[in-house]
Image 1 (tube, rainbow, N blue to C red):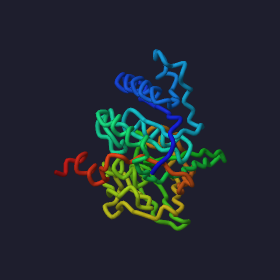
Image 2: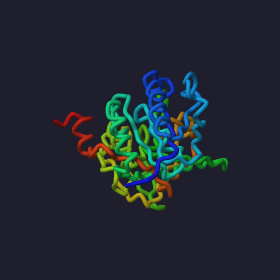
Image 3: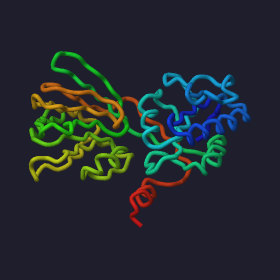
Length: 285
């Protein structure tokens, strides 16, 4: 793939000294190549070239966004930037399933990208609507998962699950994970759900500690409409999006999940495949 690169957004994990230092170094590298840079205010602070940089705006358009941190940082960016912007994830964390390259590979990878030698992997985003019984509606966008789960002190909860309007189950459990293929290696994996190739057009529904041995994870087409209603009263239950934002929900509230019209565009330049990641990150040998 080839494209001109005139403006690059740089996002760094704000509480990581290594990420901020790398962002400053990267900014200098890009400016020397006459590429405009947009930085978060907390990252630009203290950098001698800050006045030469624009303020990073999640609603703006960039030719590339470089994310310095880990999977969590990349999730927050992919969920909020304008659809279609290429995102390069640089792993400065631990596991790093979503990030494409490590710190030592950053500049060789950017040389390849600026020369147009890279690919884009399109990842499904899901639209999550929370409809409260009182009529209020909240809308979110996720790359990994939406989790409906009881708090630590709550008892087991009752959830009703429908797919395309058809009843699947009404069961008691600790909760339910609604995962994209990208998110299948996150909470879904820990809860016993399947590992799914991130390019498959599916959604994974994984119960959390169900109160029946027969209830197992279900994989449905991502064109489906998934609806979950909380039936339990007087229990503290949360809807959590990508593990980073969410809301307390109450009896009668409905969570509706559909495929978003937008996608996350992840830059691929290393040559590593999904299966490379599985072998390396999960120590499959």
